[in-house]
Length: 340
Image (cartoon, rainbow, N blue to C red; front, side, top):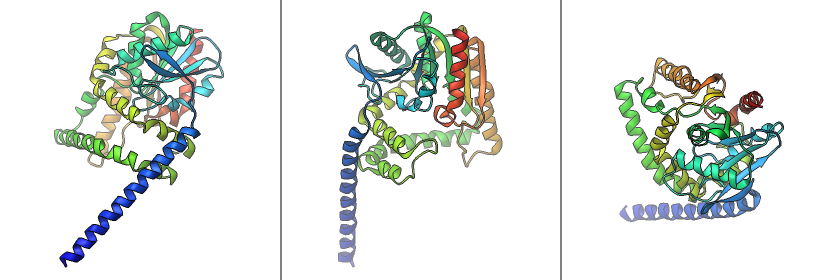
């Protein structure tokens, strides 16, 4: 019996080793192939000691600058940028470490990011002033940029942008027991992600899921999802995300200190369904969370300008640039027309 169990265990280990080797080989071949399938969108611009990727096209003053959410390369604007380029010059860029950009100095705070963006646009010879568009974490960067370079910003669009108090104030709506459970779950998931994310990457698991059509959002083609995967799964990109996340507290404080936008045109686009259902939350709890996000936190951001207004995109989740790009394009055009 012991001998049989030993043989079974050896067979399992052997099979696991073979599958791991096959997965790693599949990933290596796929990465090699992707490097040839997906050429750089944009151009590399020297900014101090690093090169950043900037992708600009279109004509029309003023120029629109797009800043992505955390973990999202410039490619995240693929459903927005070509349409904006029909009426304005528009630029997206990979923050340091993302996509085609080289890693940058740490900490990766919004102040550091805004400073790099300013230097990037200068080095590329882009014409000032700008309209700034920030999605999610990109909203912090836009707010800090406007504070640092007030003469260079004409108008702003914030797309379901981060609020410096969101975690604390939304969590305060939940019962204490659920808040504690979510805290423990978050700590556990972070530890698991540090272990499992590299394994999923190096063993080709995520690549296989996309190839099989299991992990492709409805608003993306399989080819586009594979391009995202190629950019997002680079080691430097994953490190950049971790670095931005670890400095997010500093970034939120910098955004708060940046103050308001004066009388610049400002549109706040808000996701109508921002939170994923939680099986331990009642419908009333979920409704309170959504109300806090839509009608309190996001509404507060309209007060950043005397000309601020909110548009709630009822049928979109957080990724509005991909789920409802038309609303982003329309908001940009409205601000663009207002400042011409």
